[in-house]
Image 1 (cartoon, helix red, strand yellow):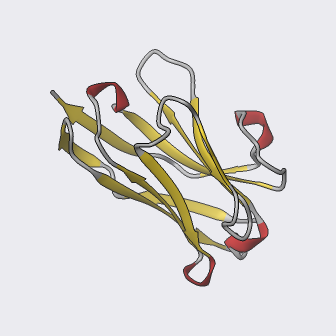
Image 2 (cartoon, rainbow, N blue to C red):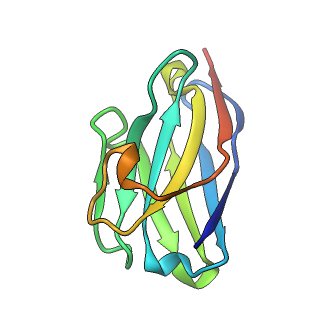
Length: 123
């Protein structure tokens, strides 16, 4: 199995940028599809983006399309989420997850999860 650890969260002003990282250990990340989710206080966990094993295919939620970019470096066993033009409504705990499924967009399609990293966007 694979263990995932997110990092890169923090406090940023609206309009700013952050890059989140998802570092894998235990098994090569290249064996998995990787996704990013977020959960704001009092809300359901929300799918953000997913990337295929090789990185050749990506898919985004409409809420982040054009602002966020998912990528991966299998040689470094790490996936990334570049977040630009951040808005206060992007404030949430961000999670990365790993799956064996093609283009998974729901939580139950992912088998392994990180502990999350907090992102706060001030207005």
